[in-house]
Image (cartoon, rainbow, N blue to C red; front, side):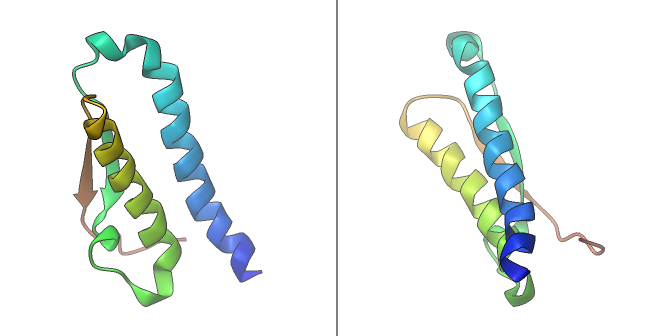
Length: 85
């Protein structure tokens, strides 16, 4: 059950990020910003919410990967959300 729960958090963020990237790829030469909203849990992990930290870290790393290709991307780590899940 716990593994299924983790997939419900990680999978939509990974798929959503990749879907946006794929959909916008043909506009890349004209794209000024590719902004991802991650959470601070990517930096300051919360032991009981490792799934959120992993999903947020993925978005941060993906933005860095796009930067390494010379593409405009940034991932903002927004603050903690009090009521999650």
